[in-house]
Image (tube, rainbow over all chains, first blue to last red; front, side, top):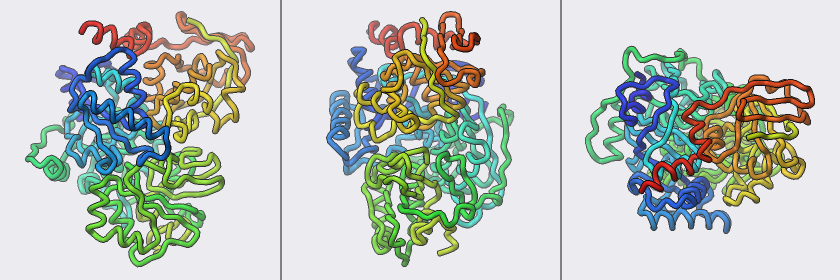
Length: 417
Length: 165
């Protein structure tokens, strides 16, 4: 079996599962946010449910429209807060909260081998630690809050094998944008994407989070990386206790398809509007004028991302026609960036620093685009109207490219700085 | 169960931001959500449609975010079913869970904007009345039919878990 199949089997009381099979699995963690949580709570209460299956295993994270952007969003968060108090489930208040998919691993809540579901499509991020993790809607979450279980169709697995050394300024974001560009936004629909090979083995955790985070942009059910010593060190750090590696894909695991990708061919990528699959080498889009650069999100708001952005912005000034918005993904990332002097670099470069929030990624607040405006963003989606007006345009990139573009006022390769 | 209405035609990869933009997600009110359904693709869509009309689309309908507000808005504005060549998986789950009929059909290119269409869920057929043609579609696996027949996922949970407590 593949690692995904093994985790599903373990949680379904089965010795063996195969693609196409419907199973009911026990879940280790159930997540919802300030947009999807209130709908789940309504469904939960509508059917007269009195208690959640295990309060410790339910996490409510108000991160999308927070600090609350208007009265309506304040009401949504209030409903989360009250439900959390009533049922004793985990809730992260403003001041402790961060973007869910950066926060939960940092809090040691996502472990290798876990079966995790979340009412947020980017829940697939936790595959980076070797969990089977997938996004669902609010009703599925409501149901699991009652039963602690969820139905799932075992997905076939696509294996992506990356070999060779990464080029300069190429990180997890470029690897995943390049891959989605090859297979398309439905190239992995309903399937599991397993990322492997020597390039992945040498990749820091933060890059692995970026890769698994965007598996959904290829339509995948989950993205996953087999745990190794890098995972082990990370898990020991966040959980504070020793961890032994157990789960791997079998030698004779069956894959629906295997893609061989040479990392040496991957240059920093930019995905043009309005699909993440419109990815090409950054040089193909140079000279696209920008109004805004956003560096943050559940894809690229971690400390490694901020360090890379700062390495480009150090001693530079953001172009006078550009707003550059930096969003540390969590309080901890913010604090670390402050300690390392990165925040100073950003301030000196005329960037604005936002509190942790999803904010502009989904056109919520903290940097919404006007008609005709263009942004480069380290976020994950560039759909029509995603960051604001339906006639605004989002180009996706890694943090170095976004930072370099902010300085030049147009999309450019970091080598241009 | 049957549905009948006019076809509203869309392309491939219609995403959840197209169906309901995130800026409207600061509420869970069905009426408010429905008022903005599909507005980035068809201006004033909710007021142009007649109750019962049917959305027909290409590949990967409902891709993008997990927001259940998307099928809720479609159902809430009076659309009786969505027919597509394929659906994104979270959208499909959400639709089944909330009782919005979603049908996978290979021949979507034979249904044109404005065609009058009738869907019979029991027999698994779609009839294009305008063109006088009938198509078969595959029914859901038994496992899912159980959830659909009970009236959605939460009813199913209520029957199986809550009432037995």
